[in-house]
Amino acid sequence: MDWTFRGDQPIYAQLISRIKQGIVSGDLPPGSRLPSVRDLATEAGVNPNTMQRALQELEREGMVYSQRTAGRFVTEDVHLIEGAKRAFAAEHIRVFLEGMGKLGYGRGEILALLQEEKEDAHGNSGM
Image (cartoon, rainbow, N blue to C red; front, side, top):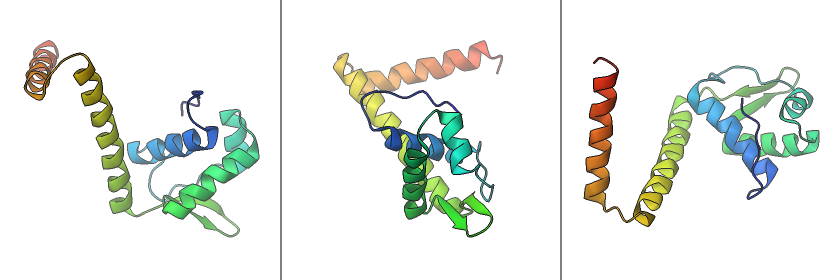
């Protein structure tokens, strides 16, 4: 998992986002056991209390759950995971459209560019 942090957002919020990305991408499959708080904190290079705070928030959201003696696990609720995946996609699209708008592109032009890129990608990949 990429643990590079930006200065424009609290570390714990970035931890939440990275772990969620791992879940929605399948890097952390449903039902899989998460490493311990200490191990995750060491891997990410953060204070264990910060990692604990992020994991507690993920528990509140239902993305992970605790089993008293066995540790934390990724939710098995595929609908919740799919909802989080769609939320990530919507945010990426919003940022993309905002950036393209700042470049002076309208929706029609953006769609045309996307279609061109799709055709180029299929042409270059031999499909």
